[in-house]
Structure formats: C-alpha cells, structure tokens
Length: 426
Image: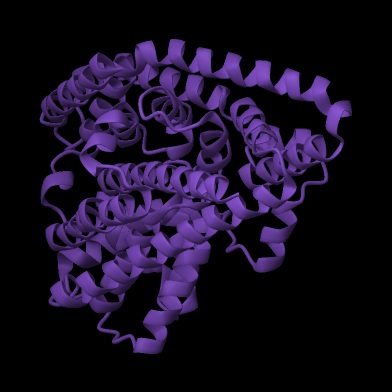
C-alpha cells in the first residue's frame, strides 16, 4: 500500500507535466492542436476505464458493507447509538467547514473589485461559461424535502441501484441489515451471503487498485490539458480563498477533532489513508474512492470491519465537508462580484442550505456545482453567477473531494473510539 501511494502520486505528477505540455500545443484558433488532441485521445480511455472499474463495484460494495456493518453491531440499541454518533459527527464537521469558509471569504473578500462591467468578467458570463452553465443546468431541478424523501425510499430497489441513487441504496441496505439482526438465526444464510460478497468486493478492489497509478496519470493529464493555463491564472483570489479554507479545515479543524475525540495522530492516519487521498484527488469522486478508503482504514489503520462498513458508505454519501465549504465561499464570492451585501441572517441561510445540500450531493465529479444552485436560490443570488467560477471548478473539485475523503476517514476513527467506549461501559 505504501508503494501504491507513491506510484499514484508519481502518476499524478507525470499527468500534470504531460497535461501542461499538451495544453501549450495549440492551433490558430487557440484550441488544442491536432497532434495534442490525438495524444489526449489515446490517454483518455485509461482514465475512463479506471473510473468505470471503480464505479462498477460501488453498489455491491455499499450494499454488502452496510448490511455487514449493521449485522456486526449485533443489537438494535447499539445500532441506534452508533447511527446517532455518526450522523451527529458528520453534521458537526459540515457546519464547522461552512462557518470557516464564510469567515475566510468575509476576511479576504475575493469578489470585491470584480466588476461585472469588466470586459473579461463579462466574457466569462456570456459566450463561454454561460453556454457551459446552460448545458450543466438545463435539465437540473433543485431538490426539495419531498423529493429527497422520495429518493430515500425507492419503489424499485433494482432500478435505484441501476440509476446510482445512493440514498435509496443505503436506506434499503440499512433496513435489510436491521431485519437480519431482528430475525436472528433465520437470517444466518443471508448474513453468510453478504459476508462472502463483501469479502469478494474488497478483494476485487485490491485488484483494481493495481492500475490506479495509470488511471491517476490519465485523469490528471486530460484535466490539465483541457483546462490549460486557466487553472493557474484565472480567478486567483477566489481559488486562494477556497484552497486556504480547505487547507485550514483539513490540517486544523479535523486533526483537532481526530486527536481529541479519536485519540489518534493525524499524521499517522494521513499516512495510512494516503493512497485513498491521492486517488480522491485524481478522480474527484469520493464514491469512486470509497473501496480504497475502506480498504486502507481496515488493513492499515486497524479500524474494525463493522465500523468501516457502517460509517464509510454513509460518509461518502452525506458527509461533504469540502463541498459544503466550497459552496459557502462560492456563494459569497458571487454576491461580492455582483455587489450584493448579504446580511448575517442570509449567511445563516447559507450555513443551513449548504449543510442540507451537501447531504444530498452525489459523490461524483462536480456535484458541488449542482447543489450550489440550491444555495444561490436560498439567498436570492443569480444562478448565472456560476459562470464566473466554471473555469476553475475542476481543480477545486479535486481538492474539495480530497477533503471530503479525509473528513470521512477522521470520522470513521472517531466513531470507532466512541463505539469502543460504549462497549467498555457496558
């Protein structure tokens, strides 16, 4: 695993270099040259294959791991306790992340001085990014409490699995796990089946991770080549605010909680889950990274299978510290760019809606862009402002996804310790 982490990081760095070289090869129109496009066309399939392999095992892994996590708790009272602790911790860290983001964006004020009458900014909102924004959001409707409840309870669990509706899959898996515990000996056959399925999925994960360095290289090369120098130059103050906030949350807030509540060294845990963090950075998907994260926590960190199986699938779906923080900063940046002063009450609305939106966000690349619509609507900001930040969203997505996975990992260790204290007190 240690060598794997090194190879993944090497793959990311090589992809960065290749991507920068390709982005510098342009034709007369300013787009990628035919040669660069051809090279990119040969590289891209390796990244796509890696993502597809990871997504292939997500549903069976989540179903088997959650069911085994519930069954391993062994008692409905203890199950209620671990569920309450897990959800409470996730909501707490999400709120901390959003408040930190709001504090930083109010101090730095990256949107101040960004005049929408400026030709460069205006161009960001018209022919280029506004068109891209339309493609992203034409078929998107902001979820309501009613729609979230409908998504939670599927009418067809097989259809929900096929459509990748993770909230539905998790809800069904939790119910089935509780039923297996409730029926006792009659559920032993199902318990053995899902135990075998879970072991098979973890073994398959190990096999898939052998090509992780190649996948990371391809994903990074394609991302940098297509974004070009805009990643490094456009909207520098906004990027700096988001990145600094994410950094503070990941190296100050989460480590303090990990040390105080989990009694574990943050540096040690970071080393143990480093392959997962590197994969999260390159894939921009906490769901795609989930199999590796679970494997690292079990095999390298020594967290019990029961805790990992219960906590991590939930975390990959509802615990989005990085995404929630990004949404708060992005909303304030757009408000500042439009010259709109948001009141304390409106910023409180951002905390509430960003928390709820991050819970409903899909664990896929750029999901934060979709849930950002909810936050903007809640405080009356124009959704067209998203066009301002699209140019640099991909690199920020990679960073916030890494923070999401780091937050999930810290949460798993904290829940493991609290669960152990509960057992010892009994």
